[in-house]
Amino acid sequence: MQTIHHQLSIDHMSQLLKLISDPTRLTMLKVMQTAQCCVCEFVEMFDISQPAISQHLKKLKDGGLVHEKRNGHWIFYSLNPDYPHAEMLETVLDAVSSQSARLDELTKKGLRVSCN
Image (cartoon, rainbow, N blue to C red; front, side, top):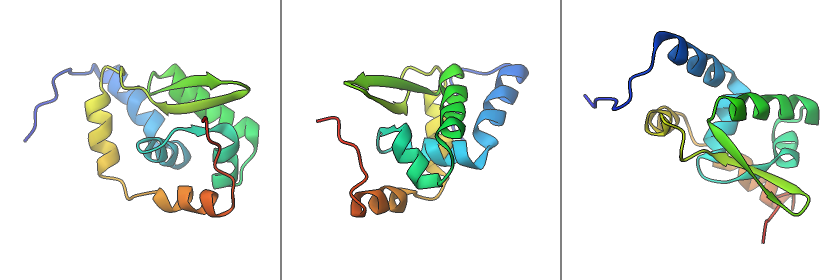
């Protein structure tokens, strides 16, 4: 069994588990495990409002799990590699089924945003 290098307090672990227990946020994190995304892509993926997506991203950002990068008028979100417990988060995400079909669908519809 692998040892976690940075142990979390009960409160911190509880907060982390609350953040990732929401199905939408967990799916967003799984997608961001392989690709950065902007709000509009998540809106299309989940077919929910932009404010709802923004609230999910704000919670993930405030928790330190994701960071944003601005490119022109686009803001792209990705997993935060500097999150102190990134290794543990990756382990959790590795146990979740792939969400690549969501990105593939956006690509087929021509809705993927490129920062190039």
